[in-house]
Image (cartoon, rainbow, N blue to C red; front, side, top):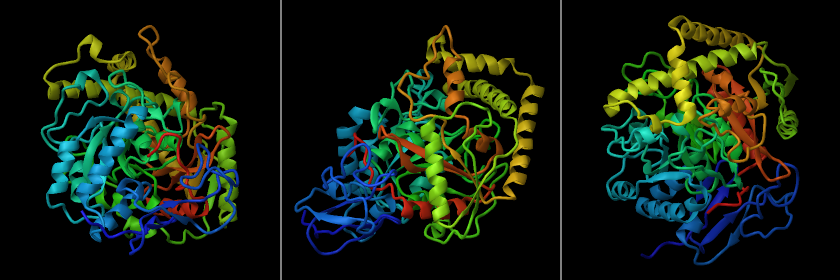
Length: 544
């Protein structure tokens, strides 16, 4: 078909797209890396060679390439930018779907991020009239956990559910469709989202696009890898102990866990694991995350509780002045585990950046017993695993065979069945008490800054468990993930922001915790950081 040529001009701070009549062109950013000038870690800037150029020249520059394919033309535009092109009739939803299918076929064999392809469903959706929403025509990926899509299998990364097909959409998926998104596939997850790495026995490991020998983190590692590699600009994720923020850190993308009750879990659940689990996305741009939360948040009929309504749409916070924030910061884990120097350096660089932006930084940490927090959390995870298997047995029509659950899952289920009802309620009480203590601590501050993780992305296999030692992976995970779980226990919003790459070219996230119900401050701060230290021009080794 004949097509009007485009200049795709992108402002790195907001990913704004402005079509115009000109030659085909492709945007390449010339940002400095986290540590200073030169090409971003993980490879040279696209189209710009491997040289320097980190010092100036504005937010980005254009390198004109004639007769570029649509795929190259759209390579690193965010979801809202794609939707704008659809609204302006510069590209069709069907064309975007074919672009993403081509990317999956080309890139996914290297990453194993997408485990269920939904090409027929995506093409059918693109050929129909789509709802008029903020993401109309934008291809999207669902994590293969909790996000039920009617008629498409949902395995949760488990052999037990390899043939399970939901007979209805979850409320979240219904809202994604209403926003105009087109689901093109489902992404990999560890079995039932239990581990902070994405290495299920059913599908095998998802590999980190920055270094394929490394973990993507988990449990939303498939989604984070797909977004980092440029397959899609935004993808579904969920978080019961850090599972949005952990892979966001490992893969160098933006990941915000919303306040408890912000997004619905219906129709089957009021909450999951005693309120630990939250639903949202991972994305390359802050504004995609904000706009997506506007599209999906709000109570569903029958919800047992829900988050306080925001003062205004979250998208209006992106670019708004955050003012001078009081930011507490620490590099010490509540559990006392050793924090890798790269993760310490990431926070120290972020402290410096926030100070330069005019914020007040105070080294401080809440006084909480990290070991008690860990014990309460494990009780909820173990009893939650036992509940989950019993609940699924009704949906599947049978319990799991001995070889259908991984060793860690079996051990957790057995541990959960050994817990008493008083022990479960005591664990809930401990987390609620810590939620109140954190609320009092946050009265002094707008935000708390910590490392997202205690280590850089781990080599694949580090968190493996065996039949002889089924809890080995979980015990090792405690050394890797001491910072994120507190927010699942307290219900606070928190985000991992990709502001630092280490000398090996691996991304290291900075973790910002907000007050309960206050995603607005986090979005304002994130957008300011995105402008001051852009990550849009950093490309992993494996990417589109």
